[in-house]
Amino acid sequence: MLRNRWYPILEARRLGRRPVGVKRLGQQLVVFRGRGGQVVVQGGFCPHRGAGLAAGRVIDGELVCPWHGFRFAEDGHCTLMPCEGGETRPPKALSLPTFQAREERGLVWLWWGERQTELPPIPFFDEVGPERGDWTESSYVLPYHYTRMVETNLDIHHTPFVHGSVVPVGSRVEGFDAKLEGDRISTGGSLVKEGRSGGSSFRADLILPCLGLVQLASKLHILVSATPVDEESSWLWFRYYQGYTRLRPLGKLLTWLAVHSELRVVQRQDWRIFAAMAPGTIDDFPYAFVHADKGIALYRKRRAELLHETSRAAAG
Ligand code: FES
Ligand SMILES: [Fe+2]
Image (cartoon, rainbow, N blue to C red; front, side, top):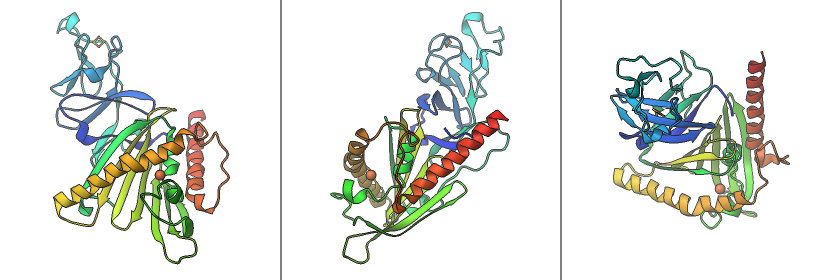
């Protein structure tokens, strides 16, 4: 997993009064709002005897373990051990790992890497935002490696074969190009029916480690993240933005319908392919790339560079 990057880990709207448990980046985590409403992300197991903290409570911005009622402040230090009496100071060892996290664009973001006093801005696509109308989102965990999920968001040429019943586009890719700038890969072209001119233009971009933008119609943007859960599974989050109408209920209805057809039809078509695909990560299978795969090839290249940088930093 690429270190020293921001990862979206949860929709902010899922945070209420109770802590939420999620597994991301190979770690069991607990997410809640602190006293001032800010997002707090901590290790999901109590350092006392390992209880799952997502079943606990939040009182005055402190996380309370459901087993023996130990309390943890937003910086992770233990503030109370009820069994030892309120006056006993908890030992330092009794503290909860606390991660750097932020809430932005309706998502909870986790900084995965070395703790830093000044963190870089959270990467996002400026093309989408509230000004583009209402959006609807959904998410779930899938049993596929995140690299396979990430690269699939740069693969538009499977559309006529897998989703032709819903998205009737041509199979020939014309005018395609892909470029890499920093951590961003931008691709675009047209899907044209054989023997016809014109076609449907598309765009598929990625900001590493895992945030994608797909555009198959000029006023419909799909944002998607395939955040690592662990080395076997990924959290797939996606959000539809529409720019057809400024009428709020209508815009909301359009994006809701898009998300539900994506969930009930389009993604099920994808998972039929995934279920029978060569297993493992993108490093386990030697792809024979063609021109239309250039975005995927750039993802593989950039990911390898960043992994190499990480291992060099760890060694030196
Ligand atoms: S396991 Fe959490 S307080 Fe004992
Ligand atoms: Fe697909």
